[in-house]
Image (cartoon, rainbow, N blue to C red; front, side, top):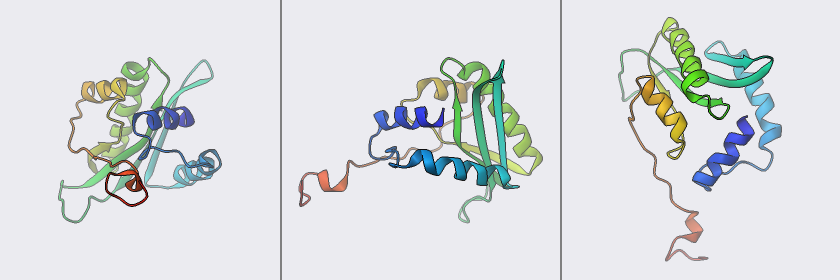
Length: 149
């Protein structure tokens, strides 16, 4: 599921979301490390023995220049099967946020691609709002006026 998401997101923005050549090899030990971490919440949804989604939520401090009033729940790895964002996605998010609040988080920050309409709608339906956007250049060597372009 994570691999399929990387492929999808790379279509949305091919520089920022470009998968590493060995992404598959790297992901398994990275996820294993997160699952062992006490400041990480890992939840998996399944239906009849088939995984239908997962969320990995890291509990962290806010950057020192911000003061939201407590810890932050950062959700980057959050994927569900197509057509399940309004059910599985919102349920996984609600469960992760409940556990994050129990661990002292006062806010959640969820990463998504700007063109991931189904996930964005599930986030809105769950009461989240946009706080920031990141704008990305093409590869710098491909910009007009840059040597090598």
